[in-house]
Length: 350
Image (cartoon, rainbow, N blue to C red):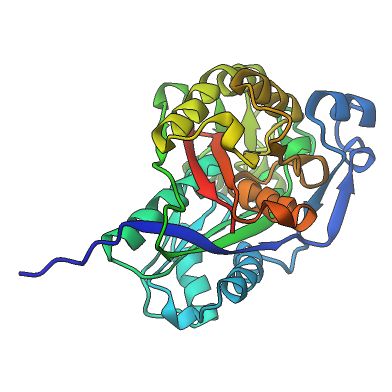
């Protein structure tokens, strides 16, 4: 029996992004919830967010980001040994967004699969892409974070709807002569399963529809609302205070572990690319990690909002566009969110 030949190192070879063209301002959001532009800016740091139109899908956005990543990596889709898409907003349980993306790109018959790890999904994908390349299972791996969160929100729900945007980011991971991706620190805390999640399950919708049909009263209104008049179709919601405290106090420990595992000191970093959840969370993490002013911090949330699995690659893409001199430097990235799940690595910026 033979086994795959191991490779010592991997790195990110190319990075791409797709931002849909519809810009939603805070004033737009305030048509649906009782709030103000000032309150949203002060509490979250968000000024605008991108939203995709009805004719733009998760796979469409993933494709746009992937094509740029492949071009920058200088490889063809046919060379990919795996395609990984991190998403919680692909509208089909099966087939996967990754399989559809692989077909569009011309990567078939590369293995393709989705990751459901919400805001930590991209870091989960990096962990798996790194492992696949170094194990010899694949030479090149495409990792995409793609979300159309506008499809899974109720605009009138005020715990999370005003935070969220749409978009996609992608990277190509390949072999390297030098270390390019540090050890992944990842995990979950299922005891907080209900802190961020969907308001209802698909089974709830199915049961209501069947009951309404049996009573001969099936209608759009009946299928959409429960006895309390609340919408029953599944949308995202969160316990904002619990999430904030968890992110601030627990995720700093994860970020520090990623630095320690990689043998990197804060002053050696060129950049910090945290999940773009809330500007106040980012500021508190910077303070607790004691990052020096020489570290450039990604703050894409101001213009893009929270894009879940797409958040980190989108933020890194903008960071490099605005600061090309950071290419080749070390960056600490950390994702955290629903589940509650988390992942972090130190990487070399492409």
